Image (tube, helix red, strand yellow):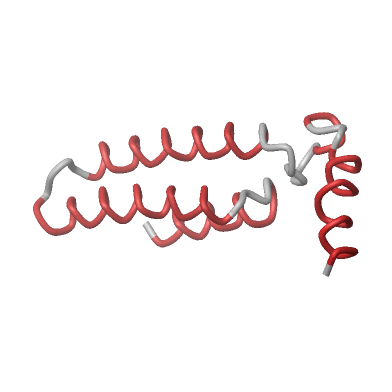
Length: 96
């Protein structure tokens, strides 16, 4: 399970660069299912892993569809990122 979590950390932080709220939602799903399985044996490790992988898929889909997506293949997936960046991030720094 430790390798599972470390692999997801690498996937979310370094490959796809997923936003913090989505990472925390994934962590909540994992913690609840793994904690329940460790404490009570329900829903079981297979179901906990399957549920977490579904959550992984949802997080990745939502993450790459975000207007600020800047992970792997961003030039193809989100070609409008430079424009979004100039309108939102650079404009915020100028106002400060």
